[in-house]
Image (cartoon, rainbow, N blue to C red):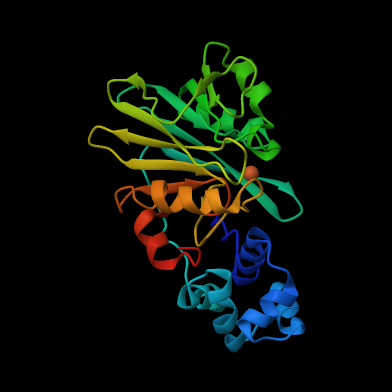
Length: 273
Ligand SMILES: [Fe+2]
């Protein structure tokens, strides 16, 4: 299986933090004791260790975790989970997006979380594994996460569609935090409100009997980073901190971009927290 690279490194992280805080470069220069040029270089990926150490605090980032990201010396432990398929498709230049299929234990049915941009690998994976699509869950409605939806729905007309209440989709059952979806006796799905990157983004925490404990987080959090707080950086940070990083530490996080990770690894490595 192809190793999916990390979505973000130090330069992306500090750019997201500066944008999120709405901190002008002048002000950041004053707070960090760095020149404007140092900051511009850091955003371009040309920081030095000294710049990384000085810039972290005023951006609310953890200096040693940011340094680890700058050194590129960390990668989450590879996850191999029975019944879980991570489907990674390219969508623009060197960017790629993840969709996930998860087999409902003791059935020949699967759920899909987000669709990616190309329906073919999702449909092929279902076929190769003799699986019927039971339901699709959408974390948020940015195009790269729902582009293949119509084609997949056409192929599995009986399957259900679930979307966040604050990002409704036609014909979808709309979910709010606190709902509980029980598709079979072997699986339960809890939507968690993780808006901030998008207006109504949701994560889906999936628990199985005797099986894995997974949380599909969309663009809320990435391995070693997080999605940009386009709607509210404050809410995005708070939701991740209070609702995702407080899940059991062995919970496997399945993000919309980049590799899978765990709560434990993010607590240790993610510079935003
Ligand atoms: Fe997104």
